[in-house]
Length: 125
Picture: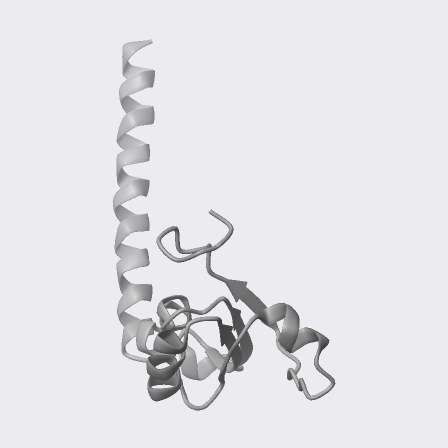
């Protein structure tokens, strides 16, 4: 019984090491932008975007294939750096008012993300 457990642990350790090496190689290819070029780019909407931290995590800078097409945040101090870093895509204001506005033109997207409320500023917390 002991040899069976040892064989199992040995096989798992080898698998784990191989998996870690494969993940490391994939990460290196993504950070070099090599994997991103092989796939189509996905369109991303970021609701409650803040300054764009979540958008950054989905960007080419982190080896991903998402392009920000629209964002929103209530805080003007967040909208400015978002627009500086990702282009003029972030609108300032209450998202309910924006969605109810006849002027709102939100583009189609493949993925919609949204940050959690900031406890220090949110009226909901």
